Image (cartoon, rainbow, N blue to C red; front, side):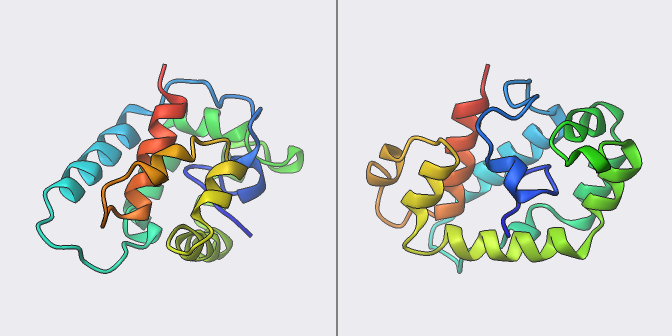
Length: 150
């Protein structure tokens, strides 16, 4: 189980030394992430937790599958037997990815957030330092952005 960002293999996304992990974030994905984070900061009252599938919509995943640079970067995150452009497209369209996104959404909004952060190599202090009412998914996005920023 798991899931993560652009990787269809949840285990690969959590690997701290995954090839391409230090690469610059895809500009299209970064723009979507920034728009999401800005909209979260403007929310006057907290809505129910946002599922990851609401951000990584089929349209976004289709856009990633059509982006040659993103596909090339994601290939290195897949198991050896699936490291092809077609393997990435299949993974992005798979029901397993949607299931992993649901499981990851539950983990993010559970009391296990510090464990999740630690397993992803993220700074857990951002959880303790967050203002009350801060959305856990927003914390995860910001922590990932901080870790992978160049």
